[in-house]
Image (cartoon, rainbow, N blue to C red; front, side):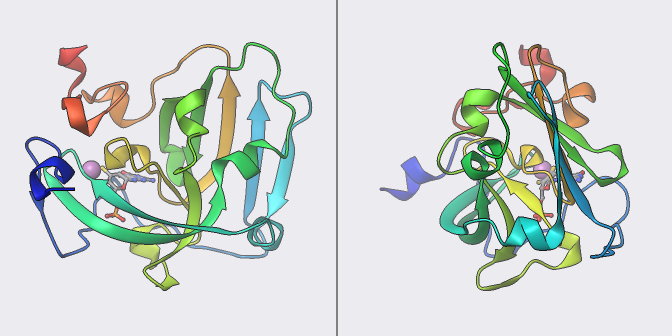
Length: 190
Ligand SMILES: Nc1nc2c(c(=O)[nH]1)N[C@H]1C(S)=C(S)[C@@H](COP(=O)(O)O)O[C@H]1N2
Ligand SMILES: [Mo]
């Protein structure tokens, strides 16, 4: 693929791995950490960190695009695919949206079909090393096809929903969807 086609419009390439988030970096207590799958499901489920890591692992190498204008190519993520996580519960008919829950009430929303894309995963490793706490350790979501605010750091749960609900940045002026290729940056464009 040519450089031009690989870099979404309005983005510049960086070799760095910038750190970007609202608020502080949360502490991690492995014994107390839990991951909750709830909402429009037949029976909700809670996993410990050890149980989460023991799920079938996957690896994906993906580009990463932040709405502030930087893109980083070839991030090698190790984790568990969104499909594996969704497969732990039975979705109720009508489940069509997902709200991802992070520490400190961070949330971000996406359509169920895009959450279930085969490039979406919950990761704890990046480029062959554990994520640093600043980059989301012990667990972050990675949604390569949408702007990086959808890739929630310090994720603690996933809520399936029948109706869409805006997440944190989506409620503070950012686009509800966030496709970098069509520059869905701001809610004013909706
Ligand atoms: N919990 C949480 N996750 C978050 C954010 C945040 O504010 N809180 N910001 C997002 C934004 S805007 C970006 S660009 C990416 C940056 O990930 P990085 O710091 O690992 O580069 O994290 C996303 N995940
Ligand atoms: Mo971002």
